[in-house]
Image: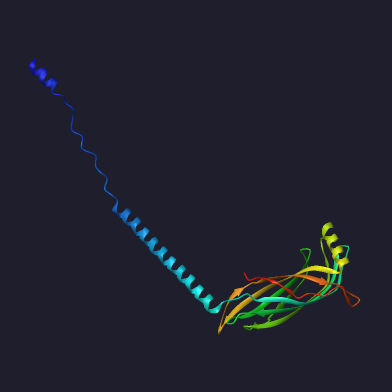
Length: 226
């Protein structure tokens, strides 16, 4: 009886359970991530250095060359016809303008100039000039533009009233915009393509039977270089 109790008191829990195996660290994956981070860091530093060098080079170029926007003045304007009949505008407008390059070290090639004439925001004519040659440093060039013909304009009632008021006053508000395609010349180097936009807000007196209703004032135009 005692032997049986002794056997019963010795509890049997079965075979021992081995401890869980710890997974081995993936050194290959860690090394690849580390190399990727290092490569990204190196590329970022190189890019940052290039940006700094470009900024410094641009600043030095500006200090040496001191580039300045070209200037344009409309010196004369002759308006011999500006009639609106059934929303059709009959016009005859001639302009003389002077373009000046104020730069001391940069020449400007005018590859193309497009002049557009507007009334009340509606374009009624345009002219294109090409192969205008080099505008040398500290020099000026004269430009003559003639707009003549007729154009259907979609003007609303307020714009027609503005036209009639200006006709009564004998002076018309006409906008002329110049769209340029330029290249810069520095010494023997020619490069850099720019598209300046020039806007001229003109007040042009009407000439009737050879008599002008006023005197045109020389007008400085606004230049947007970029």
